[in-house]
Length: 134
Image (cartoon, rainbow, N blue to C red; front, side, top):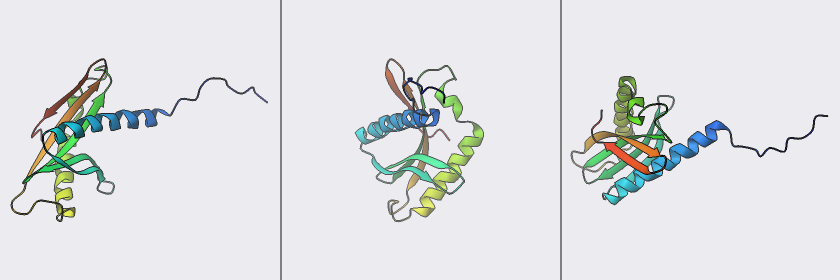
């Protein structure tokens, strides 16, 4: 029988990545709340079509926000990760969210905006939000 390892167990990479993403989303939620937005949904899934990281609302404005979080720019700028194909998917998902959540959409003529947030969690924490990115 081989000896048991004495190395500490590290969480799987996917767990670490999920924790990083969650930390970034939490920062973006705080940013929107500081601006007076209400969180309407987090990590909303439309079956196999994809997921919206964050949906917030203020008055007649509904914002779907894609959050990209990085510890460094080693893999490029977080905003570069939102390709044209991802932008198109976000538009479809945001429309699907509006249709599926009519009871949560403000009455009248709500405006839908899609933002992209880049969160950097290196030495200094920074949150950059591109409003109306797609």
